[in-house]
Length: 125
Ligand code: FES
Image 1 (cartoon, rainbow, N blue to C red):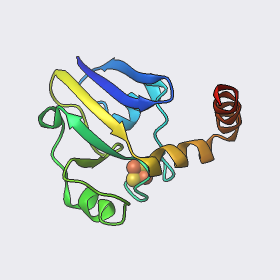
Image 2: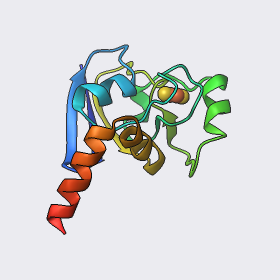
Image 3: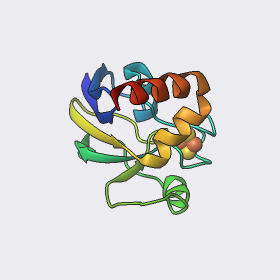
């Protein structure tokens, strides 16, 4: 099992243990981390764009198709991956930072959660 930790949710870091073969997007869904997936995980949108801050070597290699889609994403970094394409291959700790684009897409896709989030943030202010 690998541990996938999502560093920047509203509730701070959240993590989940997943077996080999799990994508980062599937891990985010299991951890209730807000990662967007506008195309449904078929490598066609870039809204699942994340930064792999630790454990990149534990993931599958990036294929040309993924790189082509990442070329269209915002604020791409050397450690950028598409969550729907990067699969866990080895045990260890993987740390993920969700991109702003991905989080915004997630809340646009889940309006009820967006409203609850806005209410939470308003209450904190
Ligand atoms: S969910 Fe669309 S490219 Fe990953």
